[in-house]
Image (cartoon, rainbow, N blue to C red):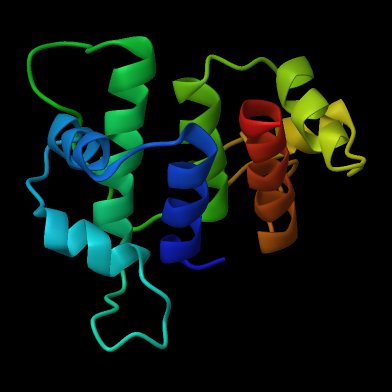
Length: 152
């Protein structure tokens, strides 16, 4: 999944308007304009379309964590320079205060079967032998299940 697709899906799932999106980026330590947010949300065929890079998406996800869980410390968290699906899944889990069972219920809404052990492998350190890379299909099913849960 592209970062733009993830941003669009989260915007729709949580029903955020442009001003909330701008505020989430601000909470995550990044200043953005309404035009830039709008360009990130456009279709790829649109000439004004812009790709959102990992650091920008990380700022948005950090802002989502602050919105849902509250601020931790004085300074906003530092956005990672690169993201992978495992990190995105972890940030969503933190933001929504989800336990493994909550996440499994979200997958079940999409009729996507995954065991608790498979799920926990996504949250391990990459150098552990039980670590498993979160593929696009798994992240997509989680985001679509989240959309079903939040929007019905």
